[in-house]
Length: 153
Ligand code: FES
Image (cartoon, rainbow, N blue to C red; front, side, top):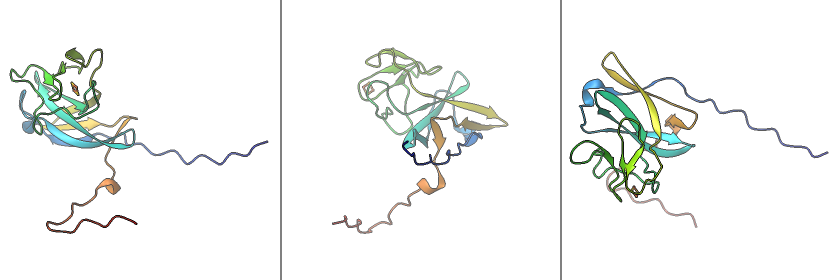
């Protein structure tokens, strides 16, 4: 009978609410807060904005082509501030639930992140797919003028 190597221990998942920003930082249909997460154990970016007085958050990844959508950092809404608009090919999403309402996103939708707002602060909740960035994930930027690391030969 074949022997199998033991499985690695299960990775602890974070479930506690993660502080995002103060309520005042998210104005109605204004600039989004963009934040880093780990999705399926890979770096990803997410965003939160206020729409109809409710904070919504999604992974910053279009359902058409998996790319970031903001046309400038933190700018996701169209000129009328009605739809979340992908800057690449113009897919439009309903801010309230992330479903595609026009353009090449078809039946797709944005991947939502659960948020909570209490006592003047906004929090987001990790899920089994979306986790906070681990402390070890932080890579300090190179100081100005620093030489690029040599590639291994
Ligand atoms: S990548 Fe978003 S519409 Fe094509």
